[in-house]
Image (tube, rainbow, N blue to C red):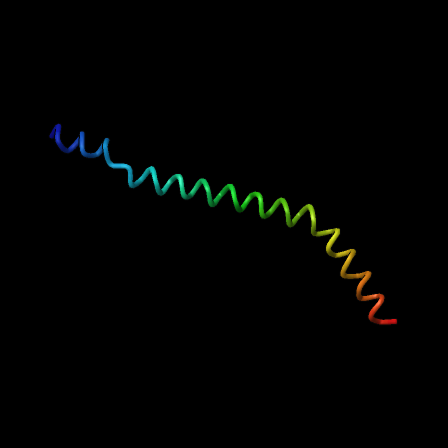
Length: 55
């Protein structure tokens, strides 16, 4: 039984999966914040370009 517990405590596969999950969550927050912050600016630029193309 002690061998099983020691092997369980030494196993790092679950920790690695959690670390990758945290990295993905952090990147998704950064991407979302960037899109939200630049979304209005990009929309205004596309509207300006569209107005030039219509003329």
